[in-house]
Image (cartoon, rainbow, N blue to C red):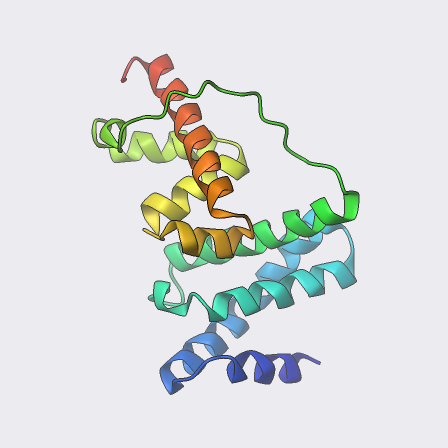
Length: 182
């Protein structure tokens, strides 16, 4: 199979540039994606399925990817495969992995708090968040994706994107308050 799958993914994109980018991503990250998916799902077949689904998602987001061998691209790939695998795990188990305590509903107006803190410090705070919050903040802030694009990558509704983003911001705000920044 591998070569047939690659040909299938290539058939989903139009330009030569996209085909070349996708092929490079495939050879560079396929093993990593399989490893991450297997760690989450614990099953070879399911991990293969997750990689397949993640590549189909990737074909819709190639314009967001610059250099193939970069930390930014690697992080993007990791987020996508992790989201797909967790979603599959969710469907397998049919019960939610994450239960949110309602962190309070006061939305933060815009991103004023994000501007008022050292970027490096912010990054370490974001990394400390649970994956479900970390991913959405990274997709929104770091990759500058629209809510619609985030819906597609995470496989959730726009309303869920907004709700999750709000919860993520609240969690981040609490971390900042602990540091006395906000």
